[in-house]
Structures are given as structure tokens and as C-alpha cells.
Amino acid sequence: MKTITVFTPTYNRAYCLHKCYDSLVAQSNQDFVWLIIDDGSSDNTEELVNSWIQEGKIDIVYHYQENQGMHGGHNAAYRLTETTLNVCIDSDDCMAKDAIQKILDAWETIKDKPEFAGLVGLDADTEGNLIGTKIPDHVKETTLYDLYHVHKATGDKKLVYRTDVVKQYPPYPIFEGERFVPLGYLYQLVDQDYKLLAVNEVFCEVEYMTDGSSLNMLKQYRRHPRGFAFSRKSRMKLAQNFKDRFKNAIHYVSSSMFIKNGAFLSESPKKLITFLAIPFGVLLNMYIRFKTRSGI
Image (cartoon, rainbow, N blue to C red; front, side):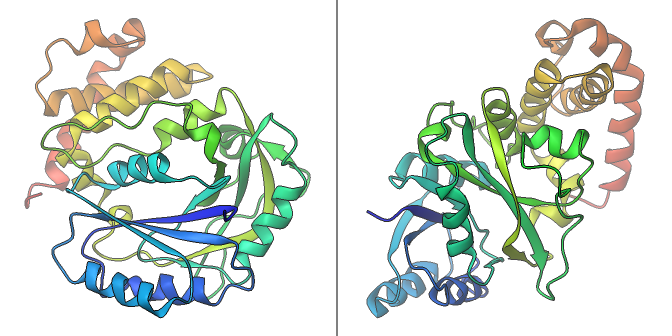
């Protein structure tokens, strides 16, 4: 069995998926399987992937499912993965040069340490510029929360998790009519029980596409309020200080307004903070409605 699964949720991305494929074929270490989660594509993704399987250059597993959104793709990947490690490389991204080798070299240093959930590495753009900052040199182990809030790192980072760890936690919920739950929900749960090895190496090269979620967050926020409300309730419950709890309460109020949930206060895990956040949540809701007034 291979050591790591690189999984890629994809939806109608046949036009750019070849970049991810080429980056995996070029890896110096082939100790991986590429798991493609086709989340209901209507383009020629299946035919394209089958042609790559026939080429036999790398190990590929293809899985088709009805459209559930990015988090549904992650659910399927965690359910289907059998290797020791897993990492998500999005359909519009590439695996960085020698990234598999760098991941496995780092893994060797912690594979017998059960307190580690895996690794956290760096993202860069297609020109090699880091997304945000590097991990401070003195940080050797961390949680994802501490990385951003204590060590003040910025920008997207790439997570490599032990598969047996992520399988311990419940899957992302699927809400009828919605296709998005913030992925940070799972990462925050993992943070409560494990730490990550910090690796100042680029694992992924990213390109933010115009049809990607990163550039359409406000519209995502309005399209998928149940998913966002669920995430904010979890973050309120697990937040480590008042500022974080209050910020998430504001977003929870706003999302609850979109779904006309009159019971939001009684359902909140932090009722007093949520009550105090109501005026700010109303303002946020009005702002999002204004910014997305041209349609979602």
C-alpha cells in the first residue's frame, strides 16, 4: 500500500485538472495514490481521468458522487482513503516540486509520536511566492489555531493529516439545498486533541480561479447560511477567548437571519454573547445583502 493519498475534489474542472495531474506525474517520489472525487461533474472529467488511468503513470482512484460541495468531497475522501496519510490538492492547484518526498521525510520524524495529527506546510503561488508568511523558525510544533493566533502566521497553509486521526471525527453535515460547510470545522476539532509538525516547505502551488470559492466568499456566505451557521456555532463553543467567541457570534446571528431561524438564540452554545452580538450581526447581514444584491 502507498503511504499517502493525494485527494482532489473536483466539479467541472476538466479544463484545468491536467495541471494537477502533471505535477503529480513529475513527483520524484511516487509513494502516493491520487484519489479524485468527482462531485457531480457534467463535463468530460470522467473520460479525462480514465485516459490518465490507462496511461498508468501514477496510481489513480476515481470516485463519482452526486454534487455535495467541497465538504462533501472531503467526506468521501476521508471515507475512502486507506493510506497512512492524506492531503488535499484542489482541482485548480498543483503539487509543488518534490512535495511528496518532503512530506514523507518530515513524517519519518513523527510517525511514532501519537500526539501528532500530521504536518502543516506552506502554499505558494505559481511564481513561487509564498501565500502569506512562512512559519516562524522557532515554531516546531503547533496547532492550526496557535499558528495563526499565537504565532501570527498569515495566508493559506497546507495540511497533511494522519488518516486514522481524521476518521475519528464526524463528517461534515450535508444540508439540503446547500453545498458548502467551512472546512475549518474539522480542523478545529482536531486541534483540541492533537498538534501538528511545522514544516517550512512548500507543499502546494495555488492559483485562485475566478470560479473558485476563495474569490466568492460573500456569495458563498449567502448561498449556504445553514453551513456557515453550523460552523460558527462550533467555533463559538471551542473558541479560546472572548474576542473569538464574539466574532463568531456576530456571524452566527447574520447567518441565522438568512435562514429566518427565530430559535437561533436558544440554539446558541453561548447565549449571552450571542445576545450581545445581535446588533452587529444585523449590520453584517445588511452589508452582505448589499454586497450581493446583484444576485447570488
